Image 1 (tube, rainbow, N blue to C red):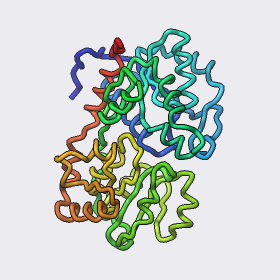
Image 2 (cartoon, helix red, strand yellow):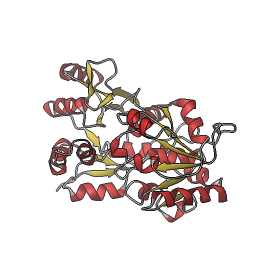
Image 3 (cartoon, rainbow, N blue to C red):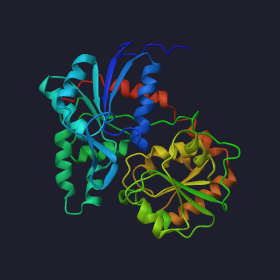
Image 4 (tube, one colour):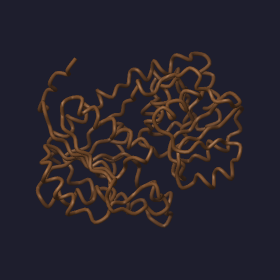
Length: 354
């Protein structure tokens, strides 16, 4: 069935997305943009994604899997002019995002942006000498010209407004329930229960709060990052599987019992929805991200939030055992198509008149 027209949105748009986060990185931002591009195309729009792939780049200091594409102004200028987009979305604040911002401003091209991560807290976690206030000032400068700054939750919108941001629009996240689902025979040959973490293995993810817990069974970490080598030495009983994609990632989810989300700084946490779609209960802190995704009364049967992460884990395991079908049922209510329609409406809004 072909989707009908969306009120206020042209039947066919040429949409340019610029992102510094892309394959082979494995994270929520990459999966979000990959799914968005595919769903926009399914709706009949033409999408071009500008990424670091195939460009002169260097590894980000302390984070080598992230590539910084350098000296791209001339290339981006030609690519944008040749594509002649109806809408430009700058997804990240990295080297490509900065260059695209400059090109757009120089040529009077309107663009939207997104706030995917708590960049100020991330920078401060890695470089303690950099004041958070200074990073917030830079972020306000970066996003100020955008016709819309897209955020995943109302909590983040309120926080950005408190920091002086304007033109903020909600762009929520969904889950691919066809890709992530329970799989018979996915259980690993390890001690039960299986506790799973999926994401970057980095200091800002607070992953050690999970690794040092005294939990029965097996801890499994899926993902890569600058802290992986050191943490694997410190916690030899934990299985570090590295970065997984496709069927391997889906099976890793489906083989676990509880998904543990130790981050205190993520703005959403797409991995929680992927875990729920795979049949896992969720354990997390009661902070922004988990509160927005699984903090409501409708999630009481699928997630446990507690400032004591160990208690949250055991409570989540009890939820999983009491009602194993509930996590999947919850995830089925979070579709990607609704999120894509939000994005489309956001890229055509006029900026607030403040």
